[in-house]
Image (cartoon, rainbow over all chains, first blue to last red; front, top):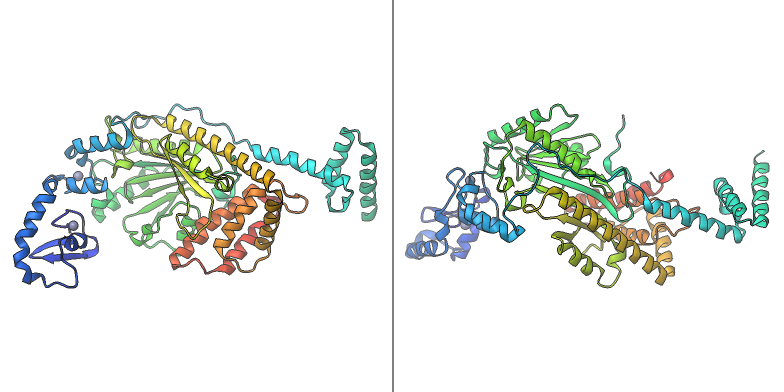
Length: 188
Length: 343
Ligand SMILES: [Zn+2]
Ligand SMILES: [Zn+2]
C-alpha cells in the first residue's frame, strides 16, 4: 500500500487512515495528525487544507512510472527506482542526479560479456615478513652477545652460528659451538 | 575435506590490509527491481540465476528457513553482513563456493550482487567477481544501456555497478596527530570514501574501510589503479607512523604489547571491546617483539580481529548488548593465539 501524500510504500500496514485515504505515519504526523490522539472523522474541516497542501508540496507526485508505480517524488527522495522503465520516465532527473553525483552522465566501462583488459598484480609478495626476518636475526646476535643461550632454539643457534662466522666473530662462534655440543650431549 | 575459509589464508601487506573485496551488481531485464517484485517473480529470478551458474561448484542457500549453522557460517565468512537480510529472508538466496571467497546474493536490493573477497591486498578479487559477472551477462538478459551502463535499483548501483572495498587497520595513523584527517582528505579527493568499520563511539577500533564510489565517466581499470595507489600510500604512511611511534615511545609500546598479549593469552573472560583495544597495541609493536618468546604472525592477529568484527560483535549486537559472552570471546582469542606455526 502507498501513502496518498508522498507515494512511498507504507511498511507493515503502518498507515494512518484519514477521510478514506491512507497515509504513512511520517506524513500523517507532518500534517498534524498524531496516531494516537486524534479522532480523524471529526476533522472534516481539515480536509480542504490537506488537499491544498498536497498540491502545493507535491507537484511532482503526478509523474510516475507506468510500469512499476514509482513516483518522481519517491525517486527524488531516495535515489532509488523500481524498474528499468523508470530510467526513461525520469530521464531528465536521473541525468541531473548522475551529473551531480559522478561529475558525468556517460558510461565508460566495459561492455557486457567482455573481460576487462587489465594487468593484474602477480602473486602476493610478503614484504613485511621479509623485513621481520631481518629484525629477528639481528635480535639473535644481540641476545647472543648477552650470553643468554638458554632461550634460543637449536635452529636459532644454527642461524646465529652462521652469522657469527660471516662476521668473523670466531670467539662468539666457538661459544655457540660449545652450547650446541653440550645440548647434543644432553640428549644422548 | 579441505574446509579452509578465505579469511584464514594470509595475503599481501597483512600488517595493514585485512581484506580486499569486489562487489558487482547486476539486474535482469523483464523484471522490476526486488522492492517491487512479487514473490513468484523473485522465485523465478532465483531459478534463473541458479540455472545460469549451475556449471559452477557453488552451494545454494535460500535465506528463508536457513539453518542456524549455515546462517552463522555465512556471517562469519563475511558473505552476509546486513542483519536486515534475515528479518526479510523471503525471496532471497545465496550461492557460495566452499571457502566463501566468492558468493552471489540474489533478490536483495538488486537482482544479483556478486562478492569476491580475499585476505590482504589484492586486485584479483575484481577479476574473480568479473568472471562470474561475465558468465551471467552471457547467459542472462542483463539490464544495460549504452548511456548509463548496467542499470540498478538506485543511482549508486547504476553505471559500472562495481565497488572495491579494502578493510585496513591503521592504529599508527590513528595514533598520530591529524593522521586520520589527512588520510580522509587524500581518499576523498580521489573520489573514494573512507569510513570506520565499526561506527560506534563506544568502540575504540582502528579498522577502516576505503571504498570506491565512481560509476560513470571512468572505466573499471581506473578504479583498480586508484585503489592500488591509495593502498600503497596508506600502507607506506601507516608503517611510517608505526615506526615513528616506536621510535618516540618504545617503552610504552613494548610494555603495552606484552601486557596486552598476556591478558589476551591468559584471560578466561574478556570484554570484546577491551579485546579490540588490546589488539591495537599488539599491532603497533608487532615485529619488534622477541620472537623466541612470542611466536605471533600477522595472520593470527588478523584472524582475531576478523573474528571480533565479524563473529563476536554481530552476535552481541543481535543480543542488543556488547557486554556478554566474555567467556566465549576469551576462549576464541586464546585459541587463535595458541595455534602453532602462526597459521
Ligand atoms: Zn507519506
Ligand atoms: Zn518503474
